[in-house]
Image (cartoon, rainbow, N blue to C red; front, side):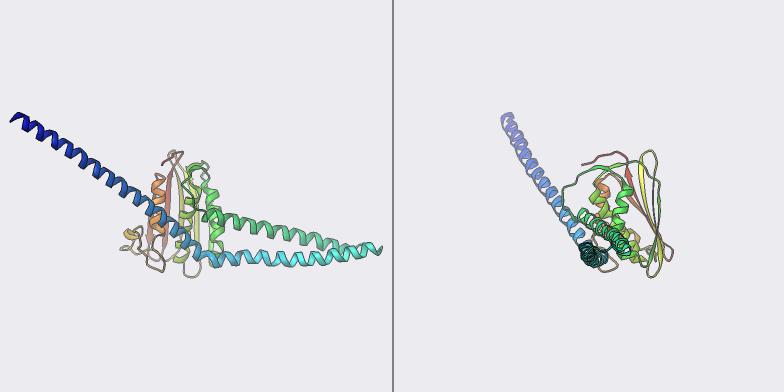
Length: 278
């Protein structure tokens, strides 16, 4: 009897071991699937955000490119005139030389502006593994603002108050995505003219990045749902704030929201100092 009991207990232990292994593998498989799906959703939202900005960015690039091309065409004509004057022994026209200097300066400014826009766009759209490095949140804010500027410059005054000085360990590309989503939402909440105030400050533990707008505000019954996946009160995927929430969570931070209908909304991103999370 004791032998049969021992065999039964042994068989049960072996059975429990394999069952445990089976479910452990299932959990690992589901976890891996969730991470893969989340990565795909993040990339999809990035592409969707880029799609909404594509026309504006094209317009923003076209402006400096147009006068750059015009200036270069004029420079080419002036150069021919100077060469012809020099070859015929005539004194070079001072006004022509001054014009050349002015056109050259404007062309260089236009080229540098195009370079900056393209660099910011490439930084945002690059798909890569999370890479946390020492990051200046003020610089990320400025870079993100330059991307969205064409969308907001005609109706929004941007007020800046950057007081944070300490770098944090973060993924700059992912933070840029979070800031872009919040800025776009703030812009869309302002119907005609308004203000977005960007401020950063810090205490001993955290860095705070605050986005305050004078938009229409978020209704009380909607506020608890804004971070839910696929929830949206306007056209779009409804993933922007959900993805942003998860990015900040993976940085061991949090996003706080305060809003009043008719008075505007304030998003505060809180990130820990010098904390690297996987």
